[in-house]
Image 1 (cartoon, one colour):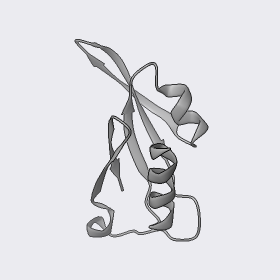
Image 2 (cartoon, rainbow, N blue to C red):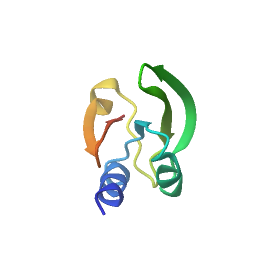
Image 3 (cartoon, helix red, strand yellow):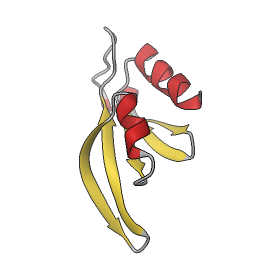
Image 4 (tube, rainbow, N blue to C red):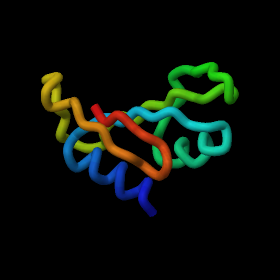
Length: 80
């Protein structure tokens, strides 16, 4: 599954992940360790901001190392 691959890659590189989920996707992302951190109101409805901390020992702290953007499924996610 693409979402599992994206989480594995983020973990392998010690990166946290952020995404904006549609109401239908929230339960799937929770299963992969994402937590709700906020909501975004749009003309199309309310979408949920979700965050997942990197799992494992590698963690990067400089802004340069944190600026990676990845696509997970049909959601665009900022991997920081």
